[in-house]
Length: 49
Image (cartoon, rainbow, N blue to C red; front, side, top):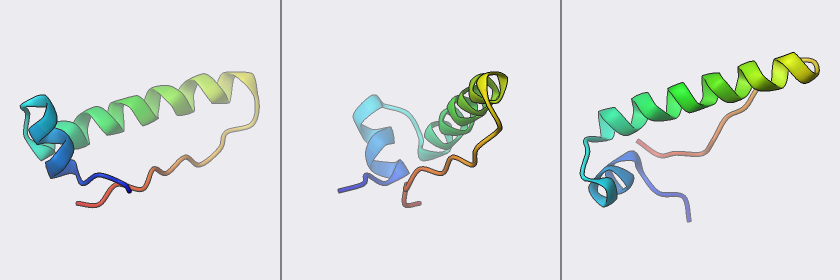
């Protein structure tokens, strides 16, 4: 079952906003790395707010 940003934040002791920021940073890095190897893809992870 997908976890909410709130649930992940509680597990790591940070706010759901910080989890959202980290998720966006990670997705940007992933997209950048993938675009260097092949055509860009659209990556979306199922996270409930």
